[in-house]
Length: 449
Image 1 (cartoon, helix red, strand yellow):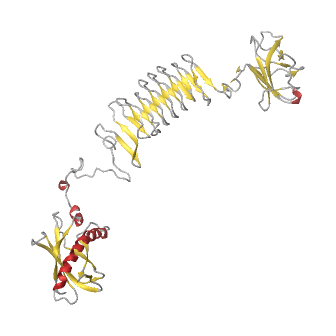
Image 2 (image 1 turned 180 degrees about the vertical axis):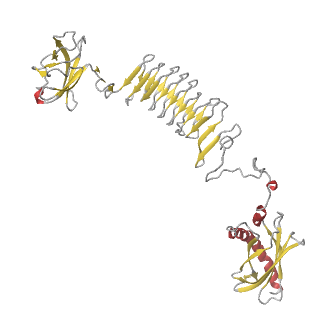
Image 3 (image 1 turned 120 degrees about the horizontal axis):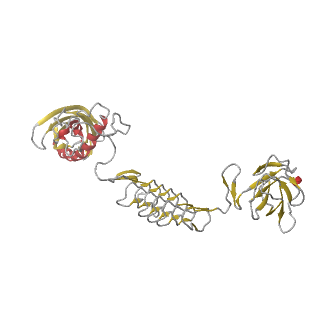
């Protein structure tokens, strides 16, 4: 190369400096699979000659490493002969040994000789080698050489938890969490999903939407999850629990109260041990200790009351202390034993299922040892019911086998002694003749309330 190419080479060097960082980073990637980062790195540049990129030639390069941008001490030397140059680009692998361990900057001086040049031409200024190669130094740095080291690492023992599990832990001393008076927060997709709040007596557990809350000073409270931006779950009393759902709240001084879930449910002030099983728009009133409400719009307004409301969109409330109230527009069927049942008409006192031939198929409170159940005329049956002195005018209904109720009326008993084992003959008083057909036409059930 002639001297008129020196300035273009110097100008080209500015581009080489820009490429140096990428080249050094590339060198680290190249060595990633080795035992350590090593001391070698890859260097890349681009040559210009008279304003044009040098192309399709091979050039010789000399590389000298210094500890200063100008003058200074030479730390290493390497020559690379016959390096291909294409469209101005050249790439060489350099290794000056362990010269980066001191952690100081290093400066690379490059000289080049291409075909036609009488000697090597230095390219100025020297190139600053940036910190990428200092991984070699990091490989051997002592713990004492690290500034700002977290507590627990100064002893030289790695106290980190592995993502693939840990062995040899001691539950008495090893744990995930905080050691100061700060909450531990677990998140998903950048949002808090579970918060463990510190408390001197009993920690609070808050799951679900980030704005679900436990009032400051409350201890032992739990929110299992649920909640949304406009319908948060909230606990304001010690040991209160909201299992989930939306817009559920346990009021002040209602200790040990529970709302299992659902939506828009509330327990008022001072209602200790109150419970809402779920559903919607249910409430327990202030001071209604031990009350229970569930379903839809059930209102337990008295201590010890139990209120269960069906899906009807209307309030259904207790009327006194320790009261049991149920609203079931579709009917109530409570079974104690296999025979005793509670229906809309009240507790069943006796029933008999009559076969089509007039004999008994099954019965409750009747004498199954009697000869038969007989149909003895329109509206008149003879059944050995063990009713005793039931008093008043008990109601009677007949049910078809498909469960429908064709007729209902009152029982008129005759020959009714006090002996429960006696045969009772009764008729049905409907203000006229009983319209149930001859039992020979179908099977049916007699029910006495």
